[in-house]
Image (cartoon, rainbow, N blue to C red):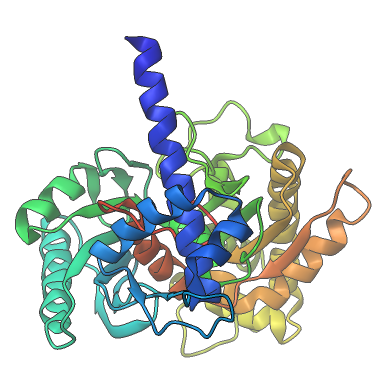
Length: 404
């Protein structure tokens, strides 16, 4: 029995791999003939015919006009149909950023609403998806699925949010709640994992087999792609780099809410260290802003002051870069990625992080990957949410380099 089940699983996986390869070739280089696909992928004509027939039945691939041939029957060309269905993706953060797109990830409609805490937040999320679903009707094709990115460890199979402090969601069966309300397939994933998928599909991770995306903000996390596969770990907690211990002084402590690295190098950690220096009497433009109560100092104020040359702010950010460099070095040494992409809320101030991190790590590591700044912003997570719905729905479509 066990051997038979393994054989069936292997056959299913192989069919999926072949289908993905065929669809990717048609999408990227179509219109293309069946014979050209067989030649390029070294698959049998029977395999090509079987898979293409399924794609044609689902309208994911269309037949175009035959091309001229000197050798009898003219080959019929195949092309990808991005309008076979639509997808919805939502990135839940300080705001809920929702998008409706075609199968190429072209965003057709976008909605942004402030996030709410607790049950009110769940209802607002349902309302946002319903609004996008209603908007889809003006385009015609049906919605095939919904992807959601949450700022939490997520048990992917069940779609449960373990703990999202900013939203007040703990052990929330979000997938079940949304599917019951929406009557659509829903896939819930950690936001940083979706950033990695979005970067792999449309950003600075395109064509990269081994990728680490570091998201900087209130929390610090990493989305990891290894050998083209999104890596979640044994407990869906891979990439929780915010819990890295940067030095021995941080050992033997309990960190509630945010991890050790996040408490030092996350947004609140940066602000708290700046406030501590101001309380010690250090001079800074931050202390002289008459219209700003120091107790309401924001991370953006600290970063802007550092850009302007304020010595206190620059010192705080230099310490932050030290902490981040240690964490990224650990990640590089363990994973050996081809590229590290810096993203998240603080990526707007990427000039204060990327090059200084590169400088600290040059020569210190056995292999130095590219370290680059995301160009997608919040769209990385939105595109990742679209991608996971695209791939995980029944008859999933794989049209990007990294598997979800």
